[in-house]
Image (cartoon, rainbow, N blue to C red; front, side, top):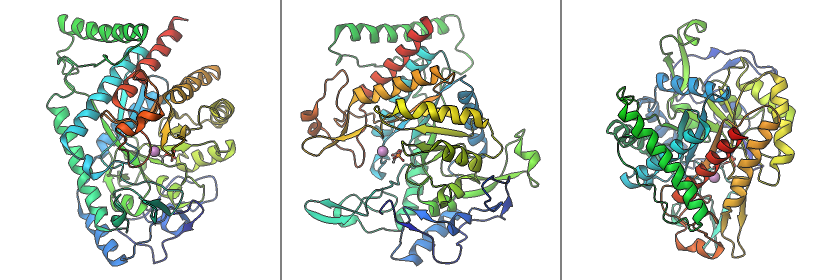
Length: 489
Ligand code: PEP
Ligand code: CO
């Protein structure tokens, strides 16, 4: 779908949900105060999906409304409360996973590899930042991709663009939008989440188990000994806690991992949006008349992409009504006042940490953009989680036309963000990465020394290039090192 193409769902507002429309806090831009899970349908929608078989789409969406939540209000609020800490500088948010998650990644090995990688990265970041780390996977539902063009050339033929497994398949003969995939997306999300919960409950993240850190690839002796020292320090700390018996509270046996995806296909998100009881003790339980709120039960955290964040658009309308913590991608075209207007709409009560701003300017633009955004948000009174996505502003093409990203640019945007936040009396609350636990060759650089010519060795992404497990871990070492040096300076 062309970026410029806007649409609205032409037919009358489709319900695909149950419950009554509820008044929400009045936004400041004159929008109607009546929000419902369907109110987005009357707005212009970018990346709109045209189903050839509307009856089949209706049937699929109706089926989704009857299926149980994948995540619950209690979990959603646990994350929202943790993100409040990240907004206040008391914890750090690590979010990572595939650019386009495929249904076929819903398998033991890729999930295990990602869990292990996120766990190791988080340990390194805890060591470096001296803060608890909140882990969110781009996992168990990251099946929809915004595209800048409705078609693409494959094997010399023009075919509809791949829009993610939730809508069509990657193979050229699978590019027709298939409504059955909406239901399939639910079941793949639920199955992935089930396996994650089972593995965490069974001790995959048990810190009593020895870990393989696999640092053999680091050729640079100085770096190798720096990373080894970090690993030894982490292992020593764990051993010490075991020795003094500080590990008996069950805290070392498992960790939290939350799910997230881009909330792009709004009819899917709507069908999984439920009016549910707030958890006990939650402040909204007093403010709403029925003690309930609207929860998106497809994932703990959802974000609005840089292509769909228009103030008057359907995505912003949908997002302003849900209880989940949300993210907004902030690219170089975002104006300061537009950013504040957006925050006022999606978070009129200025709830601390409700919104994560995911900045993704590019290493060459971060210096000129971030400071202005930080100051604008500061003077607006909003307190957000500032998260750096150093991936999406740093995509480049090789001379042979392969889409890649350089590790150097990725780290450069991250270190600039750390520095600029400090200069402005703010702090970086987290990082957002495209990564995989597999040994892919999609980004160049890092200690393995991958260059443009190596990319074809194992280039398997179906959308953007991801950091492989070694590059991702190395990035965590570098960010941790940055914090340590900063604390020492
Ligand atoms: C993404 O995170 O995969 C993505 C499409 O990002 P953005 O909206 O920032 O371009
Ligand atoms: Co991407």
